[in-house]
Length: 315
Image 1 (tube, rainbow, N blue to C red):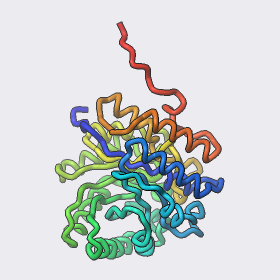
Image 2: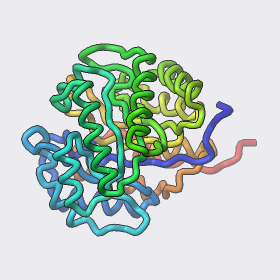
Image 3: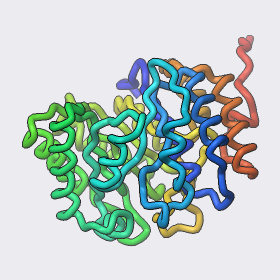
Image 4: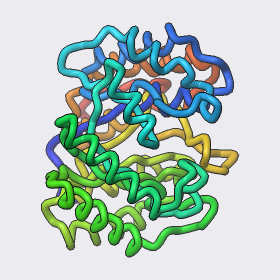
């Protein structure tokens, strides 16, 4: 664990990731309430909504209204997810922060199920996104690779394939004259293990040692936090998380599809390891309790129930 970062950037995706899959209808006011509360915790980026087809994801039929109602806190970015050019163009009409990304998927089958495009078609569409970024002076920040560790359709994904896709992302960025901050590896259906996380990140760092690394980890099989610790040990510094452990991918084809690693649990772990998060943990715990009340069922977060470890000295 000699390469631990001194600090991490946390991107909370609870509102977008969580409310897209809840069977209960979540009101627009409740969505806005949670987003605004999260912005008071010290988090600098919140994925607030999904700009997707409401027929496929009815939980975000009110995305435009949510975007317009949020009272923005200075210094916080309020982002939205889009999966195609139509969604990106829609984002440009709303008061949300557009963060330039390249988004690829390692599993061909999952790619088709999730976006109705295969990998080759997705590469072509990424060029449209990049042209849009350039035209509208939007900086490119991250490349995302979905299903980096496997999917329920194709099984495990070879790390060599994901490494090759990192090269594809860097090639796309260079083609359009953009620098790239880093690459985020998404364990979309929770098939990663600490060993596979270490293997993939180690291979990428060996080839591109200056490239920043991020993760988007799901806890479907209970390895999410262990995977985060493994990524931290290799210097990963960007983490997508969800308050309370909200969420799950609606296209994961898994009955037990779980949300991302829990934001407050991850903050607690980092701070106990001496890694700065810049987040007020007690305020974040209150947000987790709010999220649990909104969805009306228990959430998997641990620290929200157990509390923060007392600061006592043994001996």
